[in-house]
Length: 230
Image 1 (cartoon, helix red, strand yellow):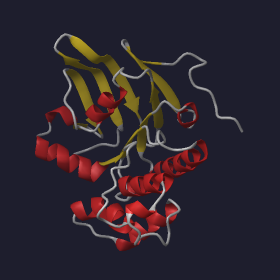
Image 2 (cartoon, rainbow, N blue to C red; image 1 turned 45 degrees about the horizontal axis):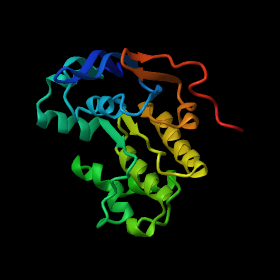
Image 3 (cartoon, rainbow, N blue to C red; image 1 turned 135 degrees about the vertical axis):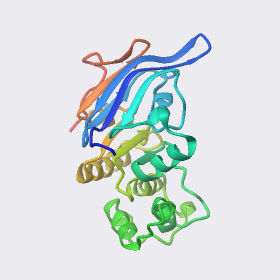
Image 4 (tube, rainbow, N blue to C red; image 1 turned 90 degrees about the horizontal axis):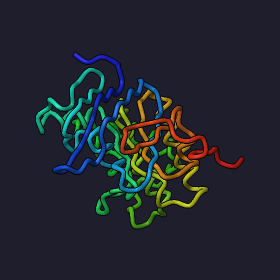
């Protein structure tokens, strides 16, 4: 049985031999809460996100999501948990080039054996891609491709959304539009969301901003994240 407790991380550490990727990470993300994680390059932000997704292992500590202990899942169980409960948005889009836009967005539903063309159309409309469902990824701009990736990540209404530098390849205006879509969809479905970013403007959209350092997750210095210019 699961409970709507959100994401809970306690004493998490990942090491390669004697070298720590990160350590002493504690984090609670309530259902519907949006947390941004910032930090220097190489400090382990993406590795931490991959652990949250049960895509990578960790050396010590515990991660639970809605009462499910991710560290206790077999590979098959972890894959099923990701299909059912997780939406992951990558910086590099990872849109499948041989599938059209609608087919890309439909993939999570097909993997769950829950095809729903109406839901796919709803998501395309939500991300501003209505009428583009039959286009191939090669016919889209970078901003449009990221919207496809967001629609695909959210089409199955996941309880947890993880986003790794989702605006990193985009110009500021397009980045702001992509964040509008991502935040609006997360809010609408009450999903917990963790964003890893170097963008001050993207981080400023979060309910909380945390700084990943060698000592774990901490409140950042006051000047580290500033609101975008109006």
